[in-house]
Length: 215
View 1 (tube, helix red, strand yellow):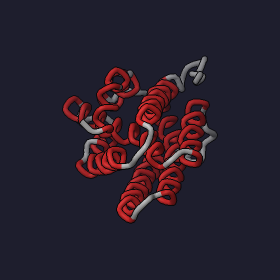
View 2 (cartoon, rainbow, N blue to C red):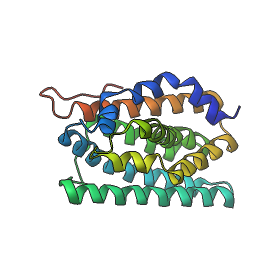
View 3 (cartoon, rainbow, N blue to C red):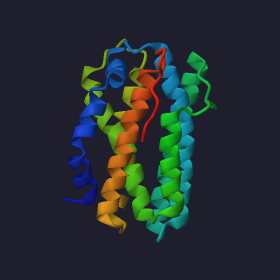
């Protein structure tokens, strides 16, 4: 079993909590309040810009041409996701230059710190959970998604063969690039905890007492 599969398997409890989170389930049913999805889109746009910068730092640290090509492809995938968010912004009035919420700021700070200071093998361990989780959520939600859900495009995007290929591309890097496996697994788990906090912050966006991230 490669590192990518082993780390994923060790974190199935967090994966399941993300799958069953009311924000995620609301996307499939279509019952998620619009303002919470708009909040999510806005925060995700902020996050994706940081994710792109982390990929760029990974490309700069790449030990060979094969790794450079992989990071180039993955970086292009982020820009395609941002175009999806531009479509949401046009339809629903989302602000794609938001102030980051505490959970968003904590996650992006984590990624950029790892990208700047850690070896590239550790960076891919911190970035892989986002890609694998979203591919997992897309595949999990697709059979149960209400055809009338206004968020059906989200499910279709992340359940696509193209997105699965990008997730596997990053997992291949995780398996191939060297690193301290204990540190890599800790980074992988930390990233999934940030993902769960991200969904929780979006779910509570309309509450009178909004979610405050506590690392």
